[in-house]
Length: 314
Image (cartoon, rainbow, N blue to C red; front, side, top):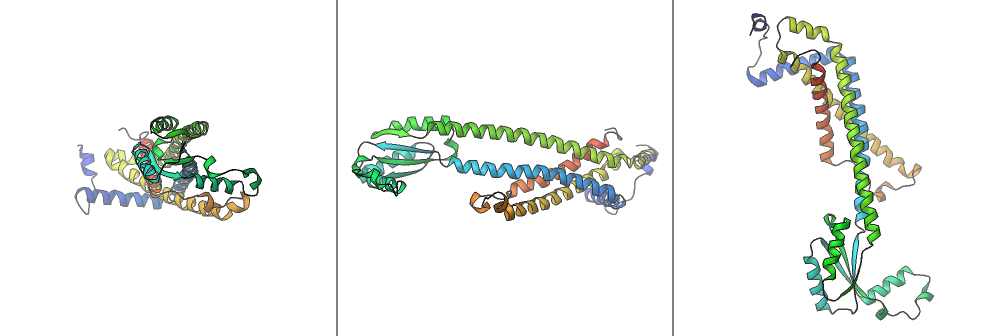
């Protein structure tokens, strides 16, 4: 280490890692206070960029939830030529529950099938003249778990179900399942592409904004280098400053996102004719909120680190 660098070594109030961290954090806070306008611009840019990404994530999460709700309609119905006895029904349910993918199995008797049919055709009872419960088949309505609702899994499940003795026919809306899974695959692909584009755009915007703030203080960096400050001594306060700006930007973005969410809930019924409660719209879950906060911190850190390369050789 050169004599100049040895001379440029401030005395810390506390030795060790905590002492260095306290010293560099104090310098970062001092830099923020000395450059209030630039700091506000940086935090505002990070907030706006994260808010756009968070709004996209909020829409994506709710659409995904709605799609999962639609997937609950994936139901397999097994019909019987003869209505089995209660003891046989218990045995059938036991065999069906052993098939991987079964979530729930409900037996529908011939009498219950007739009641359902009359309920659906209420007001058109003339169409049901001469219809008796014996005409309608008993059935077993089976709901599948979420891991077995794609086309291949449903087809495999139906094949296993047909092997059970007593099952005469199986229906599950094959075309609907295929269309639904095609829609979900396209939806996830588009979401991934748009999400990736937003991440790159946000990183680019934030990095260039922080680069401008560091460029405005290039004289300070050059002066520190001339008096013999180490690269770590120069970079550490700027990196901590970037982390603080990123964290502040993330907090402001989450507050703005919450305000947008409640504003939408309050006015959705007026301009969309949608009841938010009935539609099942929800705010981002805690893991997603934590991810946005961590993302803001990383954005500030990465933006500062990449911007410093122009002035400090690593």
